[in-house]
Image (tube, rainbow, N blue to C red; front, side, top):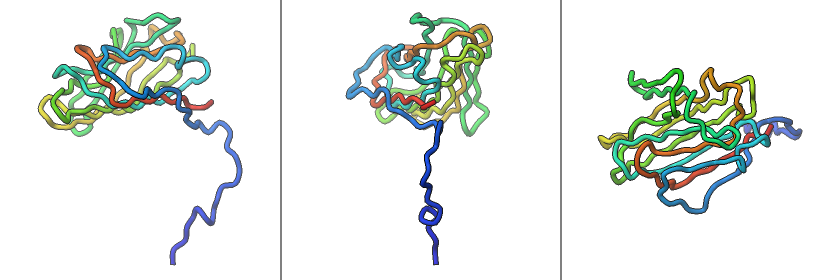
Length: 189
């Protein structure tokens, strides 16, 4: 005999501050672009933390996806760190301090079927005491036709931790990207 725990222990109360997701942005269609900018319309004091899910292709073989923050409506081109590690090997790249951008992916391919996915958490955007950070996963087709997965950590370095972030720009380091799907969620406070 089996027992359904959902029937036995059904929750009937409410949870305050549980961190539910609110869908904020998801374009109906996307074209090839050199950058995708989420400005203060979406990244603002309403939410401190966000989830970003995107799938895309690139037009240039051997390119990667990068990102930069906006502070006070101005794009920041300094004081970043980033690191990424391939899931099944010792392949590890990083810039621990003073980078000009956050390199979110390894170089991926542009052949048919070499699609790419990023799943990211954007954290602490309104804090002046804890740096804004991005953490997540990257999956994609390499220039050799194989699929690869990476763990990503990136964000403000020690020179920028007190800056409130009110936007983010995603861009391939060369060529354009076609965002096949893109969704931004806010975590409720």
